[in-house]
Length: 123
Image: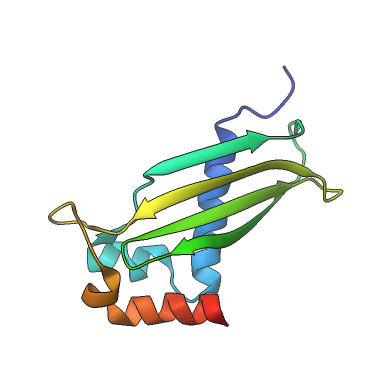
């Protein structure tokens, strides 16, 4: 059909989330996975507003919509080269203990990580 396949947006959301965490000083691999904490996608939504064709450059603007001790929710706006909104979406993630695959309250289990997330969000 000449347009980007819809699942590409999910990859763009993941890239936006990864870069948001990196800019917050919380690289996903070292701050989460290497310490046995995971952020699986629990919920995902996407709304496609305008088509994007192949070889078109996009920007993924990422922010937090929810930060709690048990979950985090990111929101995304995918923008075209001319700053037109082509898609919007969100992903919600519980914090899980990688070894036990159980929910984690990071405010209690990882107060350092909780404070970093809070300070970046508040600042």
